Length: 341
Image 1: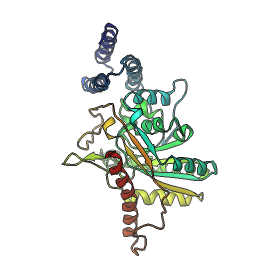
Image 2: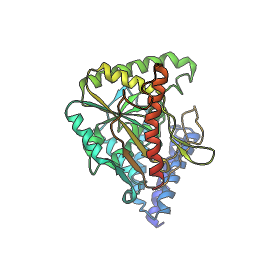
Image 3: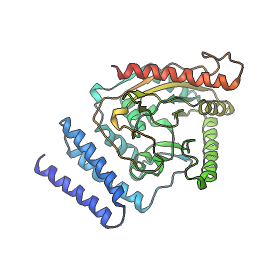
Image 4: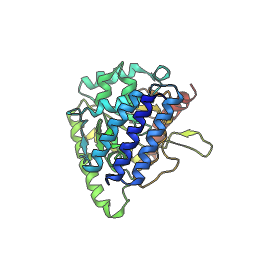
């Protein structure tokens, strides 16, 4: 690295030290932040990328993180992306774009993206049943669509879990997204004394979602797995199973809205960008690994919520399981194709 890079590094190191010395953050938080910085920096160095844009963006990121420690942003059940006075949406895209090998990345079935846009323009709703692999999946999706369907990219509302709206390192990216904030079943009992509060929050989120669907023209991304995909014991990335109850809930809410709602499986292959921890952890704050990598996004044909393999099952619970499995198989099969490209 040149002298200017060394100077930038020293400034960032000094800023990190200052955050701890001032009492703004604990040494554990500083360690996580420093590790994230080193991961992204080293990933860029490995691929011979210019570091100047990264230093500028990370300096901005430090300021945004510091704000969260001083005055944490409180996410309402329905959060709309913050564009003024600071454009968090554009910041998130610019930061994550550093780690994406765009020339080798791709989006498949853009004809379906055009079909979705047409349905939204007609006032219909679209729900995307997708897998989820990295924290910045929303930014990854927008980056992959920004050249061909930027309006669709900006319209997507993401169903978001607790972690991305409470972790100070994730919040600056989350503030740039439209989010329906919900506590997943995995974390609703942790801690147990907040269970009732979390259930009430979820109730309000569902009410917001019903209102949005009743307005029409909304596109919502949901990961029915309730979490990110992980590697199995053999090191193979597996698409996490889809929860039948989650899919049923969205179907019932869509029907209640009395607006036509279309359902599409959506497949992401973004795992290497920012892999999740090897094991699920309840505590907020995780070590982040980073890699400059190619990523993929693939739309699959509209899915019939009434006609699918196993839809003739008389038992409603088994029928719901069959539906969830049918959607998962579409996503899983496409994921297997993408990771073998």
